[in-house]
Each structure stands twice: as structure tokens, then as C-alpha cells.
Image (cartoon, rainbow, N blue to C red):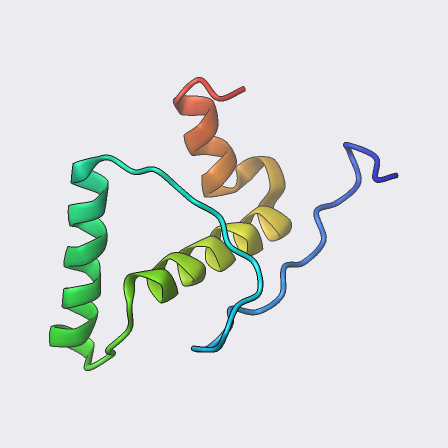
Length: 87
């Protein structure tokens, strides 16, 4: 059993386009969905990176988990959750 205060293991690197065996459902607001779509379009228009929304989300999750593993209480995720009352 993992102790609550053990360091967070380093997450695996993000995965390129491939078949995934696990699925989750995440509900987002209309504004969040629009922001996600705008980010996807900005990647395509500004950086010639054509990816789907799922890939953008997997990259964002991988980045947040890596930041949590590296920075712990100072990570963006912890700070944002604390700010939003997610303690």
C-alpha cells in the first residue's frame, strides 16, 4: 500500500496517437470545451501540429502529472486545486 506522503511516481511520457485500452469520461463546461477546441486549432494554425482533442488532453494531463511529481506542493495542479477549494 502506498503511503499518502510517499513521492508521486514519475508519470510515463505522453503517448503518441495509438489505440488506448482505458477510457474515462470527463465533463467540461461549454467554455472549457471551446477553449480546448481553440487550443487545438491554434496548434494547427500556428505550429502545424494537427492533433485531436484527446491528444491535447493526454498531453495536458501528462504535463500536470510531471509537474506534480517534480514540484509537489508547489505544482500548478496543487496550487490551482487549493485556490478552488479542492483541499
